[in-house]
Length: 478
Image (cartoon, rainbow, N blue to C red; front, side, top):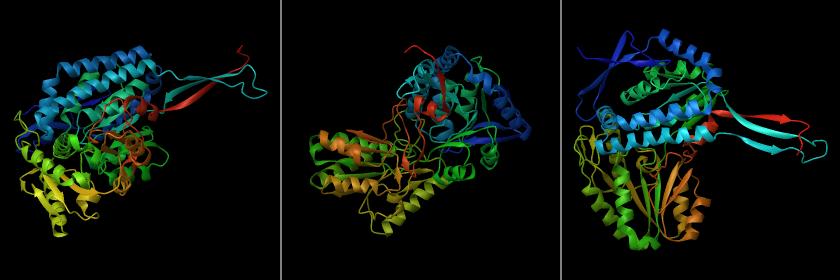
């Protein structure tokens, strides 16, 4: 009989009356059987989170930091096991799964450090007559328990980005992992249960998507942190206008390659090739559009195609594999239909453009109409679109023409161009000298326009999960 993986209710492992299978996207093999919480068990988790909210907010900084440090260390200790779980559930190539585990350990380590220095500020208030002897102490306090809804593409680290800042700021959290990829999140629940945090501080509930609305609507979860598709994210915000909702909804990440980067075109091309495809393109900041200065366009595109064709595609368990399968057959078929649509509209396939089961070949397209889905929407697949520009202002306009604005990359050696990009690109982050796929887990991460609202990155998420409360002291000698 197959073992059933339990979920976590208020720090305790439980199973329910129903189960579901988690299958490998690559070969359909059963990775695990997972228990589904009953309505009563979900209620227990919510009651516990609500009951512990005040105790959690009063936990000493060292208690929160020590728990986070413990999780970081345990993630590192169980790194290979977790990496193999990520590959089994998501089809992510094993080498990228190892990177994800390392990043998750770093995320908790950063959270521990931020928990120790999340201290507030002093303000002199004697800046106008009548306020002599007054000083303000501004501190941040948790808004209350958090609902963290995570996607499938980073099943461990994006759960870490929900949980770690919540614990750091002293907020209970209920996590809903993606049903296709819950296994590494369940191990994280186990590690958190080992820390001695108060009962109710963390629950990991493997509820199906069609029951998520009940969690979103529950008034005991005043904060919702969602990473996933735009339609779902905006529907959460629309349905809960009085809650504090943060949304990370993806994008159509662009790269600008300037003519002054001619000496390093091969580096730029290799980075674009890898990070358009490295997770099967299933990353919010995967390279999707590459806009190249006309004098270097032909050479760059030739190098890009060469590097894309050199990527090893296939079995995610093969240590050499760079590009694995998409999350399911429907996703691979959708990517294929979008490429076919672009070709019918006049696009040229420079390499790729074929599918084998859930694996879609890394693909480079040229001559793509700006309104084609592969250019205007988030592909979330291994497809990159190339085009050219004459003036850098035109290139930046092309970047901004997207209704998304998560991150952008600019390959340039010119300082003025770098600062202009920072000023003019309507995105949440600009990366100079590299692709937009770069993310350090402590930096503010989020977008503009339809890429969402709010920020991840430990201190920035802690601010999102909390609010300012001022203490005014009167009659102070200043």
